[in-house]
Length: 255
Image (cartoon, rainbow, N blue to C red):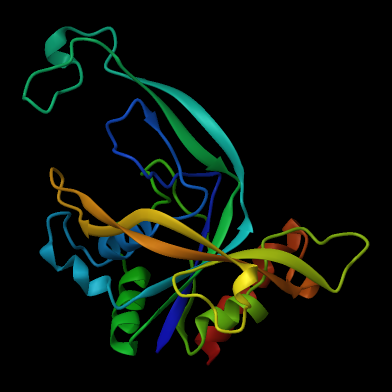
């Protein structure tokens, strides 16, 4: 198994768990498997109705929560003040005749670092697509572009080990400086080196079965939440963070 590393950071991101047509469009507190799969599928140019979504079943996603962010709610209207024919369309082919009001949830100033692990042919193909994406990646909604660097490493033997020991942590150093800092990890398989009593088991209905526009479906998966103590040396002031991330990325190219 091998993998790659992604950094999901930006002013805003949103990882919806419910239907896109509900009045309240929420956000999960971390990137969903559906959203991560969608980023990879978009980079490879797979349309929503592509039946080969199971091509990503071989992958495992591990999420490191560098910064959980602050929840922000946007009061949003669409289609108000126009004749009925120019207002938002309905699923029955008509128009709503009035403004559509939603409250959209975002995570502000959040950062997640993702280890994508899988068979080398699959991760190599995906890494190439992420370097030359067919459709640009975004953080849950098209209005949420990612910061750079986005793809940290394209070829990693142990991506989860990199998350725990080498990838710079997007977090300000604590003062006085402790030896380690607590960081939340989300696994799709319980880590073998962590006792059961230190693992919280969550469930999420975010494993994509179909992305087809009128036939979206998901199934439930387990998530194992663990708090690891990472070396304090992985943290750094924000003014130095970009340089450290770029240096980390360039090490991959040099190898």
